[in-house]
Length: 433
Ligand code: AMO
Image (cartoon, rainbow, N blue to C red; front, side):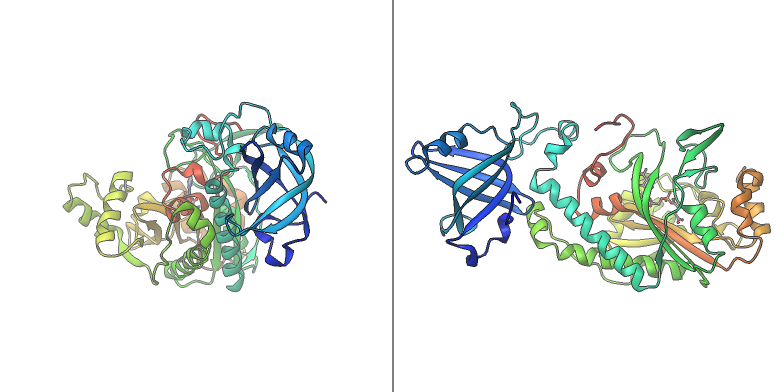
């Protein structure tokens, strides 16, 4: 193997023995008779120290290596308390595994920050930066926490089709695809399938997957391809049962993130674990509160970005970073949402510091009411035949939520742009890399 140890896994036991390390050449400092090469791997960096007198041929090879080339080096590991890791490696042999071209389109350790588009255009190099990698390491950790929490609550993981025949969230922002002789769409949500599963006896399911939205607007918090944690559960009393799972899920993910001390240090962030339960505020209360702050919102309309921001500030003064907005008007929620007292619904959103991170609801499980609501929303029940079938032969009361992973990470790490939280973002103008 080209590597026996990662940089951060060399312990004092290895001092005075031969190790093999491998990675990218981050920096070379040539002081004439001695050169220092900083080698970077997944765990961090280490120092190679090359003495010209001792290994003249190796010295020449090292100082001419272009930055970001990939090498594997075998050498003696020596204790040195002047070096950051407490050790340095004195190379004996070096395999150059790949030479990097010059100039680099983007520096990895440059002091001057490149603009965001240059970073995204060269994402492979951008992802070599410890601060970019830290986001994806935290992402990996919080998703592990999500799987663990949901499984501990008896949810089973499922995977539903992403090429679908009808829309669940409204037709305008669907990507159309040609499916042989028919027209199909890319899924905006697993909505219709996760609900259908409630008719099978698999009464708690979750899915972590990709979704596609052809939203035209290019904002700092929208993606055209994003990932989400979705759940659906049956035999609920009302939406409160769903909100309870959601707040505990968020708490478990947030808590696990707070334990990523190395990554948080790299990102210079502190994550404070929110207290449970999260505040609940009804839509009516929200409208009243923000109208007092001169918002032009009309009852029945969805909150604008500015309304959400305003509410976020008000809730902050009350010490609430997370809060549910409950009892939305029926008109502002999708057809499958359970109505409540005439004009209201059992739909809710979870907000974090003025940004929606999740929405969910109790659903309609009575087929007659479902057909009525489809028609009231201007939809043709015939287009939903396959979905409606699930309601004809015994469907328990149920509900669920969708929780955007990139939105969550953006808020968790207080990042300015949602594109930071996805490896290769897709937006209105970006389809590559
Ligand atoms: P909704 O449309 O509110 O609900 O989406 C759920 C969550 O997904 C995230 N999200 C997005 N993230 C990035 N870019 C986008 N364009 C984008 N659109 C949505 C948000 C949002 O809160 N079927 C329902 C969920 C349910 O009721 O179970 C749905 O899709 O974090």
